[in-house]
Amino acid sequence: MTDSAGTATGASETEATATERAVDAIGQQDEVNHPSSKVMRFGLDMPLKLDGGTELAPWQIAYETYGSLNEEKTNAILICHALTGDQYVASTSPVTGKPGWWEMMVGPGKPVDTDRFFVICANVLGGCMGTTGPASTSPATGEPYGLTMPVVTIGDMVRSQAKLVEALGIETLFAVVGGSMGGMQVLQWAAAYPEKVFAAVPIATAPRHSSQNIAFHEVGRQAVMADPDWLNGDYERHGKRPTKGLAVARMAAHITYMSDMSLHNKFGRNLQNRSEITFGFDADFQIESYLRHQGMTFVDRFDANSYLYVTRAMDYFDLAAQHGGKLANAFLHTKTRFCVVSFTTDWLFPTSESKAVVQALNAAAANVSFVEIDSDRGHDAFLLNEPEMFATVSGFLNSAAEARGLNA
Image 1 (cartoon, one colour):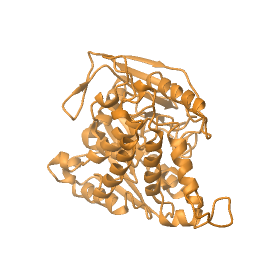
Image 2 (cartoon, rainbow, N blue to C red):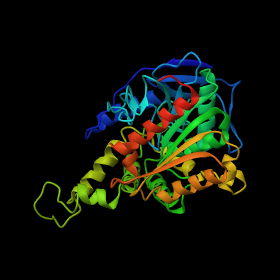
Image 3 (tube, one colour):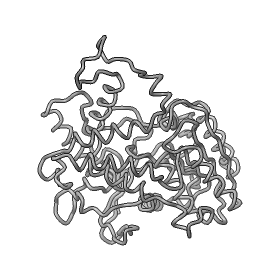
């Protein structure tokens, strides 16, 4: 087991030429195997057992840390990222050059205060930013895993994170915090390792993926697999990338992250750089142009097979099914403190899903608080400037820190 760091390679976010996109692909591949962040590597003697019944070895997990671990090692917070996030929660992405995806939440003096807490954020298993995934090089073949990579679950992601936390010498996490797929990981952490989680903050999430959400993911996966450059997942070896299919998948998914109100307020039926419709199939409307841009920029930073794997992991998540079909059983006798957060216009993970978690926690006699935040921004609200969310998380963590005896 070793801990090391790689080198950064930038990637264009503009409408790149074919040559520029090839350079981007090389940059992505470098980040897959040798990321700019810290990396914990586990050898053949430390296989990771997967829910599918197989083992993964060797394997690695890429992560970033912020702040300082106190002498007692009691102030560590694990941030779990969402579907297409990464470990760069509060630092510049080496691929896009953009600020960390949750810099409004994590940093000095912010709700997750790095002047006070030691923050860890790891790329998920199956991802494409340094943690072992389908784009990683298989030691058996010297080629990318592709679809030979075992399918992974939210439980597998959390199990890999637990191995990382253990390797860092941390026995108990002060808190685990995350939204969307990250919130699923928070719930899995609390259920699987209750003795290792003092406080948990699942945001805009659910204890299982709904039929509707599985349906949206299947549309995205089929878009990727219908791209002739997907080549049954073996595109890397042939120097191809299914960018068109992945872009369509991202476009479809992005619609679910916004509310009808936010789409209307931002775009309405406004035309894009024209005064009248063209009676053709160019991007007449601003919303069409916006979605095309979202799809185009996404393919420059994310691997298509990883998209298949992480969406599948979300689809398989069903916390109640892991505990005899009763959600409350997942939290029996837990001493973890919970703060559950939802948003009024989030139709991807509606408030009813968060209330189901709260009801299960109450049935298990857990310590739980719940906040539904009024926002017109839909699911994406958890990533945006939402002062009430910041105040809620800050207040909860401060209260939990006082209960744990952490000095301010």
